[in-house]
Length: 288
Length: 276
Image 1 (cartoon, each protein chain N blue to C red):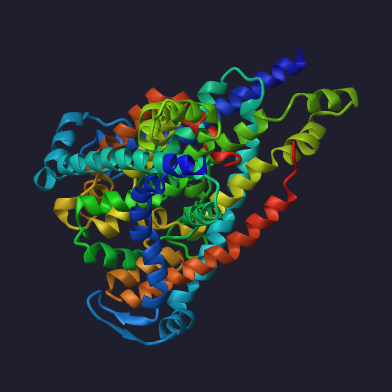
Image 2 (cartoon, each protein chain N blue to C red; image 1 turned 180 degrees about the vertical axis):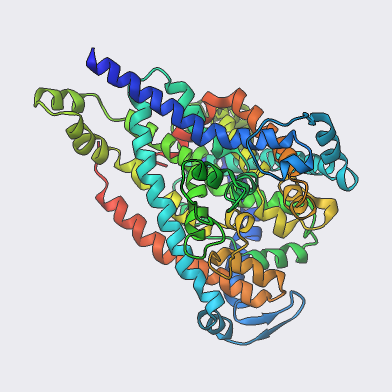
């Protein structure tokens, strides 16, 4: 029988996937460790040890990326979890406009990030943008959303949340709908109110959804590039440069070794933050 | 009675908020796409004094030697090819990975899941593509999209494979079916629901992809729709109306997809994303 199994579930089925995945993903990942230690022109390389990494940590314009990337991922992720949970609870309640609201919240997920970025940078224009002209109408002087170094990163993160919260909401809707109704009945018998229902049942039992949202949003935030590139290009100064946009700038400037070192750093950064996070979250997960 | 009223108020507020938060930005883009350059540069919400729908469409489409049409062609081709390859590759791999349990399986799983977390190493990928002569080619970009979409696709397929009873395999084997006939005749048709999910989610991702074409498909002949927007941004900096019209035009395909598959997208997302 084992021979039949081997013949039926032949390893040849893995071949097309293996060829593409190994050539285009695994091999470059492995090679990046080597090329990150070189001065590299694609055609030719010169081994220089950890010099690229040293440059990355010493240059303020490069190392600012760590802080920015972390802040960006943290803000976007936190807001997506909180808003996604609240929207998920609201959109699983008995309301009449449920179908409409679900579609509307989910729609931005499908629109191109570049289009969203361009539209919002126009709306965030300091004097003419819709956001500040509306604020002016009620007597508030709005900030320079993308030009002020203190808030530009947060402005972009907010747009990221606008675009991505629909995805988090869908995951929460799925998670909340899978909670058996017995729990709600038991709570009713014990005399719990809506507050108890939220804190004692929905929050703990939609834990798997929370974990999925945290992991996806956090890793997505650490890796994000296109929104920041469209809205600020890392500016003003380097105030919104993320590791991914620094990698692109170094690549554009022809510093391939340095760009690859940035990639390795991003790889380590993501692994060091995401792996313990996911291990921690999975340990605390409760079974339904 | 009081509770009913409260509910009504909450719902009304929610609908109003949805209009402000989601419809107003869309309206802003649409209304400015209809203006002339001067009015559009005010970036206001006002309705245009004269609607320039066709003028603007014509101008955006003909700009830079019909670059937008070329981009639509490239993006469509990229999306269709990538999805076709992605489906075959993921389904085949998932079939064996779910059915066969040997020493290799945990390793395979580890490597595939790593792809969900690890950011792709960009310049080394260019180096590999260049080495095999596929840099700046459609084939090369398709391979990149497939390689990067593979982990999520295989995850979806493998979870679904687990719900297809093994008895089907056994019956087919008894009847003398080999692996390939079993897979293509029996299993692949049964995987249709996931295939639909993969088609919908990946087509949006690939059509809207900006980063990979930017790195792996440079050159004005190789424009994809997301890049046109980006290229046009500097050119149209004084012609916001055309930029907005361009945004509007490239949003139409995902919008259509959304209208047709609204229910399926949400259901598929739910099946694929919780407890993967």
